[in-house]
Image (cartoon, rainbow, N blue to C red; front, side):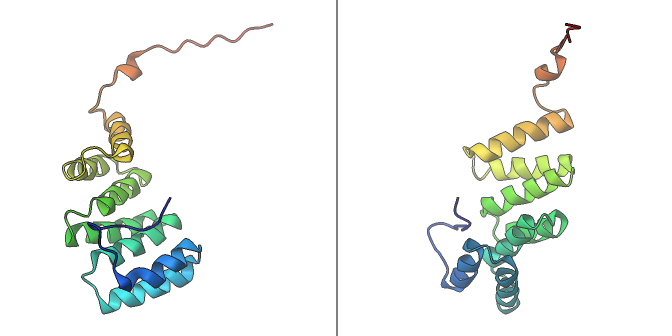
Length: 145
């Protein structure tokens, strides 16, 4: 699975070094390079999202969510940043907020399988989806034999 975010079909030369460091798993160096690039280009949604991705990979979901939120605000059509924001919020058990973001992303990207699964799970968490699965009884009998 590629670690590259795309906005349209454009790949920015500015991110080439960061992408190489990320692909090689050198997260600390990638994070340092990304922070320098963000300092130089604070309005670049892709760079901001890359920082979020690095924090996400380090299981730092609270910090990552702030970067993904900023990237999504900077570039409202950047659905990948919105999806990662919803995934961070899900992992932080902020299900209502995650579902709201996921619905917003679905307005941009209707047919993404990952997003659909996330929404389905979040709807069960907050009780807004089809709860038939909860109503079924699951009888399990253990034998003495």
